[in-house]
Image (tube, rainbow, N blue to C red; front, side, top):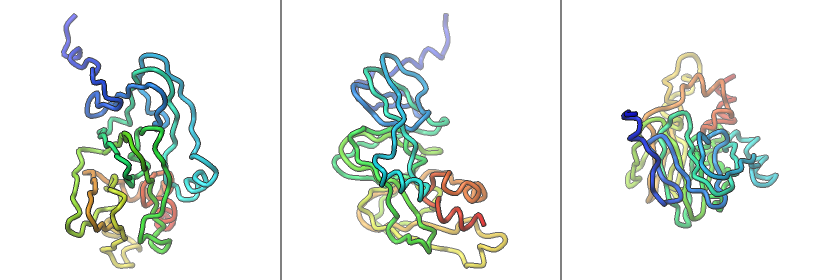
Length: 238
């Protein structure tokens, strides 16, 4: 039997987290990893999949109140496990005791030893809609997704990103909310570019070439997992 399909054989990388291809993550499981619920597409070997809570009542309440975070599962065993999320592009980041701030909707999997929490974005008080994001901190692999091939922007100069296009950024950056619209834009037809995040300091921001449809965001609110979820989604959706 012959087919070009057979060129897509399993990756032989011995790295714990490796890209099978641009859309598919392969994890060499020898213990436990944490992944987005429902993201497993195949595995070879022995693996158990269990719902994982938010990590304590405090973190659970934060996720419920803010709408930020990601429903995860704990994957334990000895296996090669493949993860994907609706054919989105997959990218790997190795943290070395540092941290990233990431949209919950862009989390695919991470080392279970990581500390994960929800925080309010600096400079984004409730009058700004209460923008929240997920912080992942520690040493190990993090697999993230993007809708399309992203760009990594160095923040040597003041940097502004649409809140629905930003994927993640180095957590040491100073953040704030910038607006390029007049309040009248909330009534009737606005520009569609109501809220941007500004970044300052030494670091980077990852931006995808796609953003949530504003109407969808307003209808979904917290369920979108966007940094503009929660209070902002509720405000604009009224």
